[in-house]
Amino acid sequence: MNYLRDLIHRLRSGESERRIARDLGISRATVHKYRQMAERHGYLDPTTPLPEDATLTSALGPAPQPPRVASTVEPYRDTVQRLLDQGVEMTAIFARLREDYGYAGGYSAVRRYVHRLCPPEPQAVVRVHTTPGEEAQVDFGPVGRLYDPATDRLCPAYAFVATLSFSRHQYAELVFDQKTPTWIALHRRAFESWGGVPRRVVPDNLKAAVLQALVSRFSGLGGAYRRMAQHYGFIISPTRPGMPHHKGKVENGIHYLQRNFMAGQAFADIHVANQRLVIWVREVAGTRRHGTTHQAPLRLFTEQEQALLLPLPVEPFTLCEIKPVKVHPDCHVTIAGSFYSVPYTCIGQTLDAYVGERVVQLFRGAELITTHERANALGIWRTRLEHYPPDKAAYLERTPERCRQIATRIGPATRQVVEALLAERPLDRLRSVQAILRLEETVGPTRLEAACARAVYFGDIRHRRIKEILNAALDREPLPEMASALQPRQFAFARSGAEFFALSREVDA
Image (tube, rainbow, N blue to C red; front, side, top):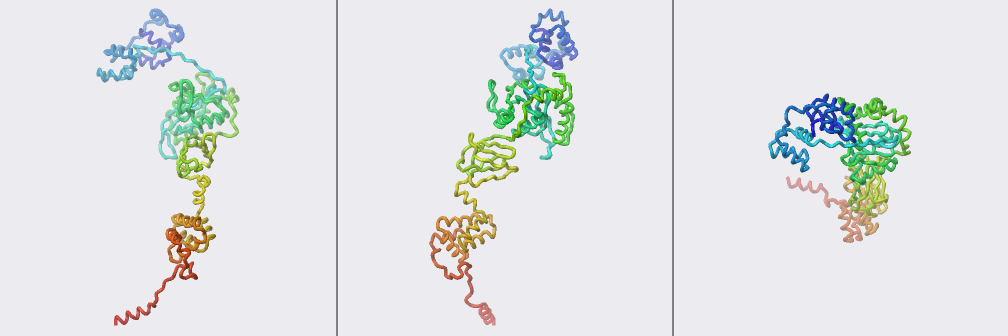
């Protein structure tokens, strides 16, 4: 293929003048001149075959001069052609030339040379037109680092952009992550800013929206996102993998934000940036003359599209995430560093946690198992005693105050034992107190009261000692001094101290 035909094929395929000039080694002005001539003769229509070389030369003049300096790849022409015939990609060709033939040039030279040998075939595209309120496209784009007051450091930030396909009016917000709760909240705020909901939303295949995308059909949509779509009444229509042009409207919106709003800007923090972004969307992006519609997006949205959006539901969607959780032996599941109880019959099972902004719901299939208020910090326990087996629940219900009440019912000696144990380090001694009171279940209140009286009398009120008294049936034996049974025994010397001091004086003498 001659040089002129190569140039026209590149123009027909939609390549930029800058790239063509760089690849062919000619000036952009030269490329622009040939574009204008080719347009006048109708040669840029991809559906029309190009005429013969002689006709092209007659209509457009001689071909622009190729680079005077020979390509550094020219000595390897036969090798490159052979690798191309075998279907080897350009990156692999570059690697082979360097490793096997000692090529010292750069990859861009190989790419230009391959394009001269095998110009890319023009690809026809179909521009999709949508009706008002029919579709919105959503995606994230990187915007560099912004200051995060919460962590007091610079963090990688992303721009979320939602673009209405008819008017090109958009909603934009800067965030620090692309997690499901963030994704859900951004959609909700976009719908609220528009005052309605499009009938179809086209997201990219990011994990928050689509877990697994298939070419012919899409399955595995994120559970929370799917339920959000049901709540608002829109259809999720993900793009096919590797097909970003299927959501070209939002891609252009992201690029416009990056080049116009973010370029050369320095914001105090992300909150200030978002405040400025709201104004920019309305007063700059919304009022510009769009290159495709040739109208201002905000005006087109207000006059023709807003009224045709689906109405917002009465209650906003509050579900943030759906995730599988396993029930541990302590009858709790762990969600975001906090703990939520479920019935003990679910131990070992995997449930679905529906995490909302205010509540957490735990499902087994379609069956709702329990609901908890969502914890607002790490390490919080949300526990319901009815979720434990009856014996465990009864054990946990015995707080220090409840233990005192039970001891009072059993008798004064038991109350004295409980009070003495709880007087120092009540949290440490509570287990011992609970164990003593549980002895009532096997021996009854009368024997436990007698055992506690004997323990008090001999000054050893440990749980172990009281249990030994009961095992040996010593609680049935009378105490030596029944009148002082509830007081520790007082021991005294048989002889007075004066007698000993008198004896000491006689010895000294």
